[in-house]
Image (cartoon, rainbow over all chains, first blue to last red; front, side, top):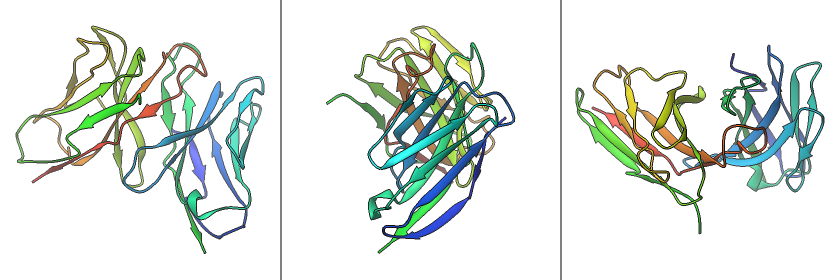
Length: 112
Length: 116
């Protein structure tokens, strides 16, 4: 099942913080986060692995709650460059050959 | 610089025609993928390949075909059987697909197909 992202869209002023959530009805083995700017390819931001290992990116961090089957992406002191659509991708399960299933995305707009 | 090259960037075709989208990578990645993106739908997996001469269907494979004759290349054919082919198509690759962490995706710039 496709993970559910919330909110669908958010508008911020520069310097404000935002949280994007990703939840799944199935057990999570890892969660990937990608950002896509309009008309461009998605770019990898971060991966969170079962067991708590995290690989981060600048001022963006994330949490991974295995019990609740959810992940949250935290963007602090947002910059104009943070604008874009954020996707979470989750592994389909053990032995899934690493294939990800993506949420529908959260559109983030940062205004001056 | 290593990366993924997709071509063409824009493609217009008449209904009923087959079209082939090219995807080439020089990252020496074993696994390659094709995703379809429609507004508000996220990324949906069409086909993926873990190794040369082998590929598997994804979630929306109907009306599409692929081949993997070389490690570097994974072309996608959109056939006339695909009922709604107008979309943005993204090719991706990863080191391999067998373990968490090694399946981080690198995407190409995409091909936008419009069927008239």
